[in-house]
Length: 96
Image (cartoon, rainbow, N blue to C red; front, side, top):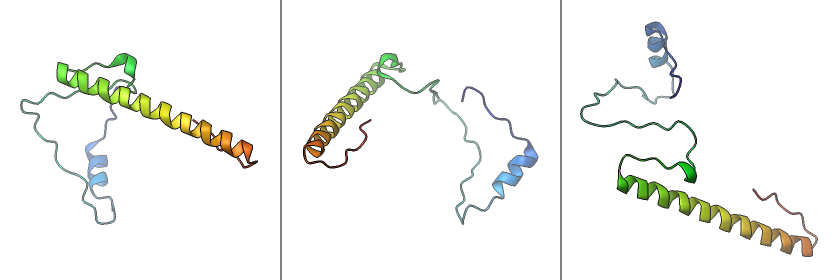
């Protein structure tokens, strides 16, 4: 988080008592040990893939390219479907 939210001890105690329909969703903070923790400063984009290792960079780039291709294919299918609907006088759907 770029701007963490501070919680008082009293508020923390109240949050842990909240009724979550029987779900116990709180736990103590875990020790960091030798792990590295990374955070994202903004929504990920293909133009700004920054990763700690070469393998992670390749994985992130592959994921980004796959996402772009999927989005492009979906958009093309949507446009073709709308063209067909227009020919038959049916209602078109909004393509994103």
